[in-house]
Amino acid sequence: MLHFEAWKRFVILSVFLAGLLFALPNLVSLPFLPGKSINLGLDLRGGSHLLLRADINAVVSERLSDIAEGIRISLREEKVKFKSLSSDNNVVSFVIRDDDDYSKRDNILKEFGDDFVVETNGDTTRINFSESGFIELQSRTVEQAIEIIRRRLDPDGTKEPVIQRQGVDRILVQVPGIDDPERVKALLGRTARLTFQLVDMRVTGAEAKSSGRVPPGSVLLESSSNDGQYYVVEKRVMVSGDMLETASAGFDQNNSPAINFSLNSIGAKKFATVTGNNIGRPFAIILDGLVVSAPTIRAQIFANGQITGDFSIQESNDLALVLRAGALPAPLTVLEERSIGPGLGADSIAAGQIAAIVGVILVILFIVLSYGIYGAMASVGLLVNLMLILGALSLLQATLTLPGIAGIVLTMGMAVDSNVLIFERIREELRRGRAIRDAILAGYSRAIATIIDANLTTLIASILLYVFGSGPVRGFSVTLGIGIITSLFTAILFTRMLIVLWINATKPKTLVI
Image 1 (cartoon, rainbow, N blue to C red):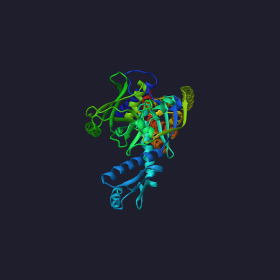
Image 2: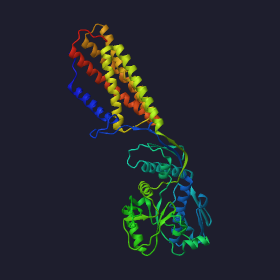
Image 3: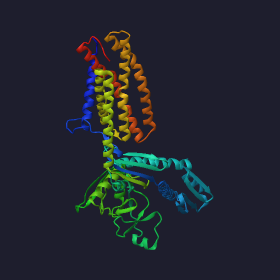
Image 4: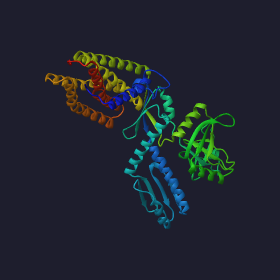
């Protein structure tokens, strides 16, 4: 009698039941089943495809503008006389009026590291990014943009969008299940840079607009409500949007859509200090360079506040979402957009199902005709293999694409290779005159090394495809890798268990394979 250990049976049964439970949600919808169905990729489910470009020049300009404002404050604190401070043409420049202030200027410039090139020629100073500093800023900006895009498009982590860097400053975005590129562009087109800045009371917005003159250290900004109103606000940012802790859509006292927000501990302290020291002064709420509102500070405000404006309910929900996700480090320009309807995906799924069914039938016919009842047991193992692949994909919540389906179809052919090697080895042992028990044991023991070697090399290739590939290539490598592992399980353990149970139950005098 052939012996098959009880613990092996327990492991096989446990894996079988786990695979069945996780694979069932793809066929039926029952509330008690664990896991979810497999995520379908853009080519199967339809969706939106966008190619974006990050405006690095805008980031450089903004960064140098902030540096210029910081230098202005430092020079004033050190009581250094200067003129012509500007950040035009991606260069910060200024002129020192008094030669005795050169040492103070040099002390201020010491804070600039290798990311900048600082040139001093007498009374004139010029600061711009070095080549390495620009490359680092560019790389960091694109990486931050990818993370912010992911938070905006997939706040719950369930949509599985494809967001990848392409080239130096381009980002590929594919969102399965959303076939409205305008909706996606609305979420990504807004930089969502939120700042709180004090209104300059020395001149009104109308006066500055008509005269074209703005006091030093301030800037003229337009209202977001398109009512033709302008505000003169100080350039210094008192509280920035990166100090936001939460943001949610709500309603104000007039039952109009608004955004409620709360600040983190650092932001709350700064907000309390600014509002406490400037009671009676307008405090501008600025979003992407437009003044949403400029309420007058009536009392000290700490962590919580509300942004009101001319919002619709959908706009307030979207604005709350992008504020929670954070501001984009750079404006994004849409270079290419495509909408893929679900009809094309349905045709692909139907074609994939036909290919899978035909492939399974042909493989089963071949293996049954070649090896009889034992081929039928291998065919049962093949079906269990497919079930385990579906269960693993559902458990990992991997995204299934057309190349992934190709990987599954390829796996079906590979799944029987191990059984063919084992059965052929058993045939050889029987021809040598071995008993049934000895032939089966020898067949499995001598074929395992070849099976593992063959599958291990393919598994290594699939791992390399996953590591160095992207998009559809990764989808193919995932299904191929999972298929290799499950086929090893079914061939070495599951099919062997079926054969042992059959031999022990029927006790045949001769073994015909």
